[in-house]
Amino acid sequence: MRKVKAMRIKVLLITVIIMLSLIGCSTERVPDTNDNADINDTIEDINYSIIVDTNQFSDSEQLKERLMMAVAIELKNTENQTMGMLQEKEKISNLVDSFFTYKIEKELIANQQSQVIGPINFYFSDSEDIYGLMNNNYIYIEGYYFVINTRIAQELQTLFKANIATAPVGAE
Image (tube, rainbow, N blue to C red; front, side, top):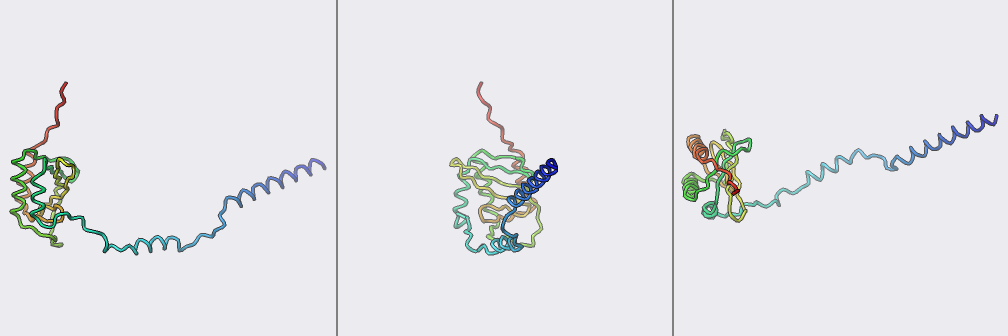
C-alpha cells in the first residue's frame, strides 16, 4: 500500500511538472492574424516620391569633364567578366569624345528591344568611380542615355577586347 501511494505521488508530481513546463513555454498573447497585414501596410505606405535622384551632373558637359579624368574604363559582360580595359589617356579621351557625338537622352523609350552587353565602369584616381551599363542600343551613364546602334556596340566591344588589361607584375 505504501508503494502504491509513493507511485501515485511520483505520477502526480511528474504530471504537475509537465503541466508547469507547458504553461511556462506558452505565451500569454493570442496570435493576431492581422500581424502580417501590418508589415504589408508599412511597405505600401512608403512615400517613394521623396527618394532623391543621385544624378550629380546637371548637364552632359559636366559628365564629359568628369569622364575625361578617368584613369581606366572597363567593359564587362553580363557574367561580370572583364571583356577589356582602356588605360591609355588618349584611348580614354577618344572613347569619351565619341560618346558625346551620339544622341543623348535623359529618358529611354520604353518600347525599345535591346540586349544587355554588360557594365561599363569608369575608374578615377580619387576612387569616386562611375558605373554605367552598355546595351546594344544605348550606353547608360549617370542618368544619361547615349543612343547607339548595333554596329557601334560591336565596334566598342571590339575596341575593349583588343585592350585587355594586364595585371601588374611584382618585383622579386
